[in-house]
Amino acid sequence: MWKIKHIFDGNYGCEEAAEEQTGKLSLTLINENGEERYVSVTDAWLTERGLDEDSIWPERFHFRDVRREDTEEVTEIEQICFPPNEACSARSMKARIEAAPELFLVAEDIETGRIAGFLNGLSTKETIFRDEFFTDIRLYDPEGGNIMLLGLDVRPEYRRQGLAREIVRQYAEREKKKGRRRLVLTCLENKVEMYQKFGFRDLGMANSTWGGEAWHEMDYQL
Image 1 (cartoon, rainbow, N blue to C red):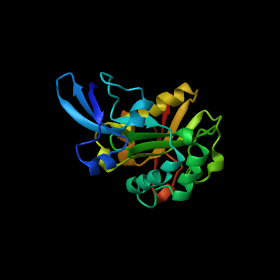
Image 2 (image 1 turned 90 degrees about the vertical axis):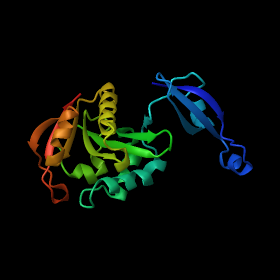
Image 3 (image 1 turned 180 degrees about the vertical axis):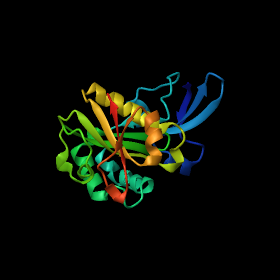
Image 4 (image 1 turned 180 degrees about the horizontal axis):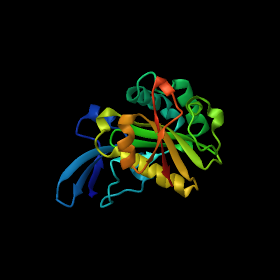
């Protein structure tokens, strides 16, 4: 666990640096082993979270709903994480963000402000996944008890750190509180074991032929 040891202005004794650092604060963090590290954040970011010296430092990632201004970055991450035959188009991603931002969960790196990864889906009363969920926003039903997950994306440099698991865990917890019943997804054979470790159940081969691939359908009971 890290705590804030010291907060100081981002002015390093140079006028040019001071101008560039306007609104920035530098923080010294310390953990229970006496180890220190340094981060830089905006004054507004710190104030918004009510943090001060001796406050417990939040985890590396801030988990939140998607925002419209994230559209370009989220679309870029999707293109990085999936091959062209599987990736969501920019048009469909924009439609999802505009219609159902509350069904995204974004992990934002609090030190850089970059989106490290995200999970998104559409709620529905339907129980079986079909490919039209990827492209037809009209299938979104805000009252639906099931969520068809449409993509778990993590930037390559943030992988193998447990982030994907944490995104899924927080998403499931959030949606359970809203009264949802199930999360449903499709994945390729090589991802089945990973999702089973996340708590999903393999339902066998799906009806999906998205991207010309053979998919497994899996679900998670909330």
